[in-house]
Length: 214
Image 1: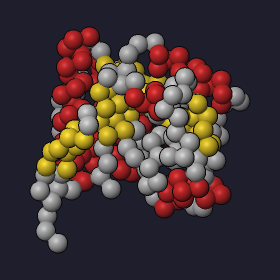
Image 2: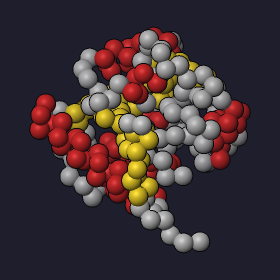
Image 3: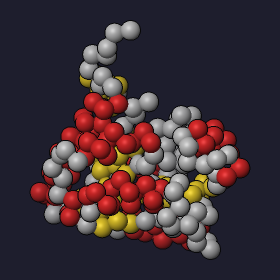
Image 4: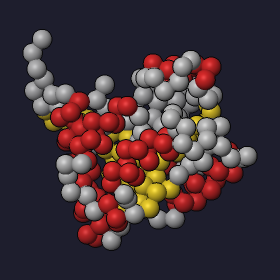
């Protein structure tokens, strides 16, 4: 098997870049991220950013240490959180954000979704208000093994959803992915629901970087 040759092409309005491996892809995504954030901060003084979590994003976040990002002017939003998991749980998205974004880079503001609240629906509404306070400048997204984005499953993703954040059910394939990646011991341990930014919320970003190394 030969090596990949990096290439760029367009599909409708989408620019697609193919890199040689996951590390090269992470480097490129980090460069695009840094360029976008610096531009927004120069123009507006701050940048509001949605960040996807998960193992597939690790090459990207490692590469962030090698680029110049004005982190003190960045507000971070997480995209999902499991219903029922307490803060600090190893599999919680908030823990991933804390470990891979907050501790190494110290962004100015971090807005977290709480999964252990009495009313997940009320928490979704609270988080949506935060998202809608000002424009979302950038969203860094991934795609799950079955095609999900956030917890917007392929069979249930609603592109016309009037809500930007909802409580959504995880498909069995998505729950199994979490087991396969080592976040839970068995599928019975994986929460069946999560609070997630919806498709319109994800697409509200002025710029999207979809980072798919696997």
